[in-house]
Image 1: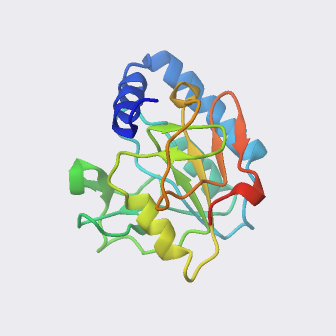
Image 2: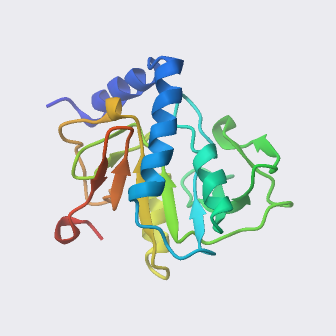
Length: 196
């Protein structure tokens, strides 16, 4: 089996190489599938998304649709390495600035900090058991570990089907997602096998 880093690099390159037309069609299908198949919290709850970079699935249309359905949306904000993420409110009118790693994020002086009930999570790769491979910095895994001490939440990954691997290697720090949505399927984690 390839090393975790080799799998990460190969999956990242595969995502970057996806044609724009294919990505646009897949993003629309992912939005529809998410709204149709993912168990959502009650209206009024907070759902965090993300600001897409590096050819990640564009979740802005999904977050806009969720706001129209009565949810509050947020996106990650981070100013320090080796830390947990904060989530700042996002609307289609939110102004973004380049933060850590040049990832666009809201201004904490203008956007309210929110506690997400459902996290929509980007990734580099995943498997059918809902194991996620991120960029290797550990931000989401540290954030999951932090949140689960005092807050009940669920986490669903968003990816293109081309990012699916037969098996994603994991260790004790890796958090298994509740599900993963692609343009082709909604993969739901089996409850008894899900890592808490």
